[in-house]
Length: 190
Length: 320
Image (cartoon, rainbow over all chains, first blue to last red; front, side):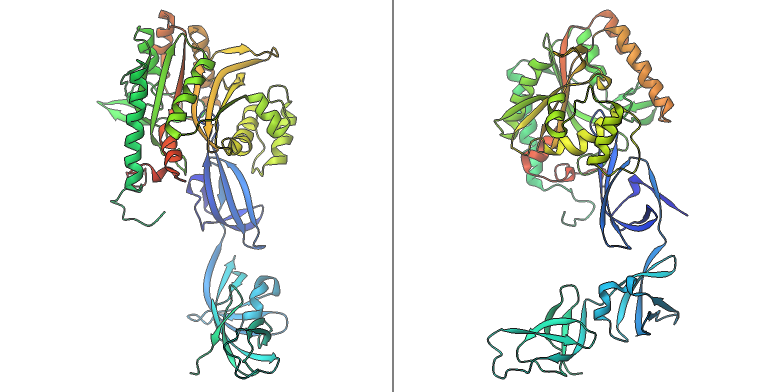
């Protein structure tokens, strides 16, 4: 397995630390004029999402992590696993709830997600930035109130709850930003 | 940093103009004080002996030569020859030092004052930095006082275990520090230094641990503890200068060169030929003096409000 020395550390490099795959966020070279050289490194643990800060002696190295991001189509959830497929090879992967995490509430069948593979198995799932989902439950719409800007909670077909304008009804489809959970607008009919 | 094509300077032109103004200001400061500018070799057959600084080597007429990591040896040979107060303002080179505050090729100001000790020179360092940075407040603390204040620990008397425990408490380390100096370097650079200068002042720190004397004299402090008569200047949480009441004792100089040499060998670092002509100069006799080296790129960073060294160097290493 390849390894990287502190002087090769840069943002986005995937390395193993304490047995977990991590992505380097920041690498700062610290050296007192007359003292020893260190590298103060911020790393995101790809399993937990937590950011670690760690100081290395300059010249120390870390093993590279076998981590890669792949575009995959979300197929279905069998109650235990979420199934994804690579569009080119039709190879399928199953991810457990821990790997999917918060992305679960945005996953709609046939949408393309980024699946992060670690040693070939799904480690994390990133939904598309924008998804189009149907409202399955919300209070009745209030007609003629489009200008006032009030909001109400609406439950979407995937289970996510977002704030929507008062005039929207059950059965309508809307566009949502998955990074912020924000309502972006009514989906265009196509 | 905005993206720029690689032929272009990484630094905004206004920062480079301010840099020119500061360099002129430095030369005027010394001219008014009758300290003369001198040039010493940037390319030498001898290299640094510093345990933690690596030289860049080159080939010159079939021989190995080294780019100077500081002008110190050349300046001291001039002092021993009787030149008098002098300074160097030019390039120094250190292998592997690159980051937001380091570039392998950088601009160093180094000057010497005959008959002065470290405390007298600290006053002048404060004056120059006040002029250049437009900061009027200058404070000074002993290394011990600073560690007591920031960490509740006496750096000279604490045991190795206490230093290691303090490091483990304050920092996330991937390794166990090997010795006292590694613990102290870690605590100083990660914990103490970032807090120096937050209050808009120039901070001078003096009386370093004797084990970090480099080329400074070692004397007992008021508590009877041997300390290095060495000081550093900080501002904006950044180290700017390092000065000594200079060692002028030739046998002690030779002993330190040999010890540094041994340290480098034991730790698997490149070993360079050390500057025996400095030992000869001290044998001849160098006047008692104090000297200091200042990183000018960092001074320009603070004066321009820059976050990174490549905002004040036209063509840093990745564009050089």
